[in-house]
Length: 232
Image (cartoon, rainbow, N blue to C red; front, side, top):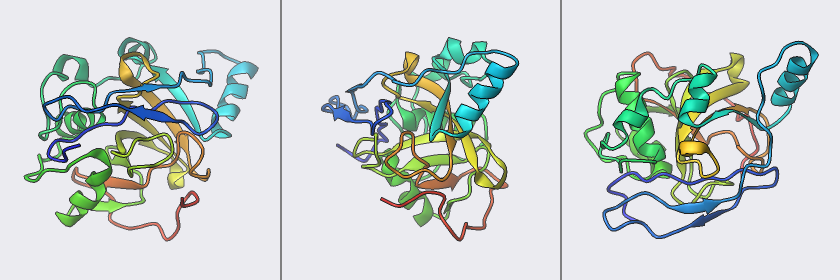
């Protein structure tokens, strides 16, 4: 797999650790293609009263909670796709276009959060943290809105190329994050918004990211003194 163009990761979901089958790349440095296990956990449905409270408690007590899937499905729940479906055929930050986590993240960082285009090649998703840090980008364990969530290659449920997503919201004291992400194999359009809670072991899907990259202005520069989850 060439690292000259960013490649995404096709990730499946289950209550057990997710497994991936990674296929060969397309001739022109295209992203990963894979078959993923169907999602095992049910998604929350809009409701009110005790049932809604019970679902909220369940979301807070699980490693992750899928908020919505698919462009139309997320839009119906008030969660934007940031216009990516209309621009997915174009390459951003020299990433592979289409249903790719890297191209989606580069698009959102550039078009929504106005981050400057890197003058260097970031590589595959799992290489972004090291590459960006080497070029002066703040890379730490502090989530913030607009940051890039990065999973190293080989993280549970991820392929060897790693994965990136956009942090849409960060809970107080970093207790949870809400991300939007592309190239998720069990989702409609490969797209979803997911809440990830801190403090769960790395074997639990979807695990806490390995790093947060802050490309846009106004990012937090301090570092956490401890990690929210167990290391692999």
